[in-house]
Amino acid sequence: MKIYVDKIPEGGIELTEKIQPGAISIDTEGISFIQPVDVKANVLKTGAEMFADILLESPVEYTCSKCLSKFEGIFKKKFNLIREVKPAEVVELDDEIRQEIIVDYPMKIVCKEDCKGLCPNCGQNLNVGECDCK
Image 1 (cartoon, rainbow, N blue to C red):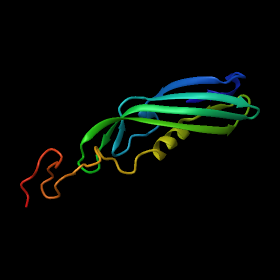
Image 2: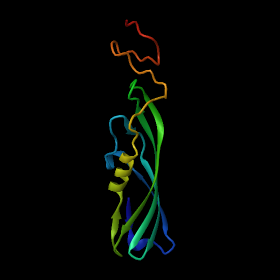
Image 3: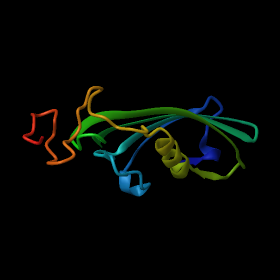
Image 4: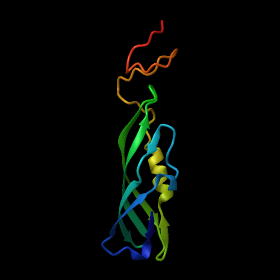
């Protein structure tokens, strides 16, 4: 997302953009963004500082770390950004957006709280059925 500092009116501006996941390299093992990330930013400039309230939202596909099942969810993140700016500067926020998404990734992804996982011998998903292992 690019913000043109000299185009921010006195009362601020609301900007929206859709960022393709590949454009900022945010897919990782366990989480895949299945649609573009919706970015909404309320931007205000006072003197030499720019303030941005940013909301990120996108459907994602998760892979359970216990049973390897895939399931969908919504990734949503709000954050604030304050930056010193020059009058004719163009502020690029893709790196900050990427970092905020990564910081908010869950440590352990599970499809449900009581996920039984996989049988360590045969690999049967124990949420779906029992296995014949002893």
